[in-house]
Image 1 (cartoon, helix red, strand yellow):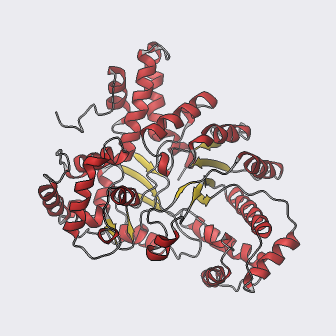
Image 2 (cartoon, rainbow, N blue to C red; image 1 turned 90 degrees about the horizontal axis):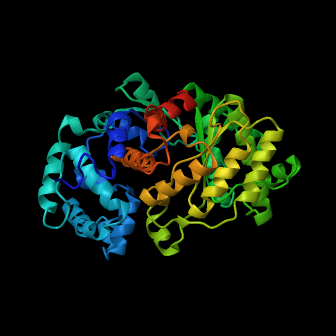
Image 3 (spheres, one colour; image 1 turned 60 degrees about the vertical axis):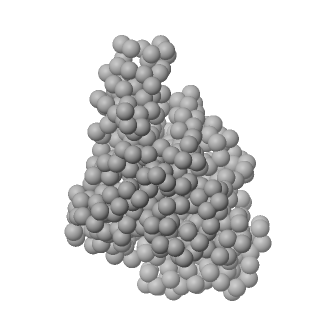
Length: 471
């Protein structure tokens, strides 16, 4: 029997029934990812499996890079550009057998099976034949970017886009549809990043040019962002996202924020107190903007980034040198959401944490502000980044179940730059069905309610996201 078989990860008969009857064929709404819109619009044809899987220019799979570094693979194979595609792939094949019990072992073989129809285990012995078979298939139209998305019955993709982006590639996709809806999502983090005044001023000039106005004051900044927000809305955007170390809810006055903005634009670095106040004001104003437009907002909390300063200077951000932060998030989070509630400006919200110690904190935070207007208005989002694996998913499901309504969960996302990460939805769905199937067979859920449980699976896999986002 192949390692990735029909009943992979399904440990009970009830789990198998739930998966094959109710989860397996549901469409996918990938409401948060980092696919490059240009690559979608141009229907990219990948040069080889190394470009698709490991290294694509500056970008690559930092999950794999971390594993390869940990296995003693030189940086030259990853970001150094000194070795051929085959030599880099060979180093990954040497690493894969050492990834047993890491999710990369499952994801690698799921992708080989589901994308390429290859059911061999990747190792140094099989590397050359797998490399050549993948490359031969990638040279065909059926393995171009858009076809890979459609292969997995992806109904909607939400990319991650800066307010200054002209969304030209989204326009091209709208003009040349391929069967999957591709929608921008608003990520205004750079407009808040005042800690580096020189970079910030350059960004503000870029944002002003996109908005067709000069940004001289904090009020100008909000006006420019509102123009871009309106433009994103016209392009179908209904979702924002913030990647933060923590929530921010310091006390501030408008005059203080005007002064901080002016100081930074003049080239002076803000103090820690000024940084906290500016972030607090900015996030509140962005949340109000989202609420006024009827959008959903997302908060990804808890990454500490670019920690290896030597490697950051050498290869830059998003290359595998980020980690889990350990801030105390409860107090600032509650202050932030209470402030929005008092203002009548709390829109639909999804919270994600990167530290598993915060699962129950996030879950109880979300349910403190549900108001009965929308089912699951405040959501605890799926396991993110380092928690996007079997143990993380099961812990997330447990916290969501015991402290809220698991049945209202909007389900999985890829959070990936890869066109072949969609088997992660399958992985999530198999774990979901295994959790529920075990509960039925242990008598924790009634076998007489199987129709309802099948419906619950379908809701979490697809229906809840469809109803919640209303793209």
